[in-house]
Image (cartoon, rainbow, N blue to C red; front, side, top):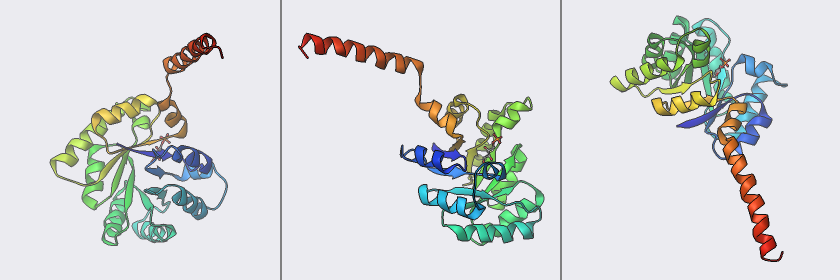
Length: 218
Ligand code: E4P
């Protein structure tokens, strides 16, 4: 499964990318609002750090406006994937952009029908928001499993990005479901490396190693 970082914070991206484990980045208007700088410059800088798909979202609501914005965003860098919200207008824009060879990530997906339409329209990626579904009292991961089955049944090559990830267990569930990608906030990426028993084990080994050194006279 590919790991995308769900942030626009360049320090977080640089730090995580140094692990060699980051395959892409997703942003949205909220994440962009949390960092300084011009939208285009932020996206360009991220693309220069991570050699993989970098999602940048349009804000127009009509398909013509979305296509116009997407065309400009795609010029920033080859890594740019344009995020388009799942609406009827959005699906029109996805179809048109696919014809132009511009990759899209259909975002704000909360149902299997929406994911089907996104794939049929030609989206390169689809983003079901599992955390927000959990918040609304629905099991978000059930949607991911449904989408994967539908895409498998009909050989869609749209990749499923598990989005709105809230904790490390969401990542494990994505892996078990067979999702193509999980987009993960930096804090959760950090938690994936950690276990208190690992820390405890390292401390015990180092203390015991001191005894070995003493026994060996130095
Ligand atoms: C990623 O593509 C989404 O924009 C993001 O995961 C949304 O997460 P949130 O529900 O925590 O805002």
